[in-house]
Image (cartoon, rainbow, N blue to C red):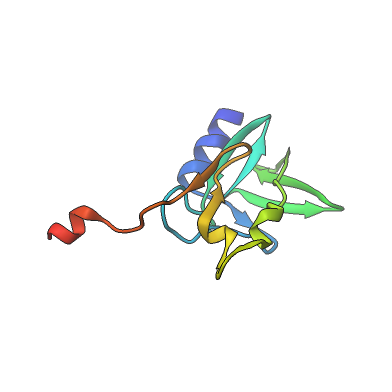
Length: 115
């Protein structure tokens, strides 16, 4: 069941029943991620998904086929609120998982410039 659920999260996404911070695009994965059975799973926000994300008394759960599966949603990193000069840190470096930090040095596409 967990393997099927991970596959659905990756391919179909999740319908969160609350506001959830997510990436709209850019380098790296879009959407958000959660921790399911101690592994990180990325997902996109999809209002038509068969998998729902609920929050009840501070605890998160996925609801799939009438089964409740406990998950964890990592807190927003505190460094996102910091600034480096004029830029907010969330524009300079993004957390892409439980222990992955990514930074984009160059945000232009060489191939696009070639036509």
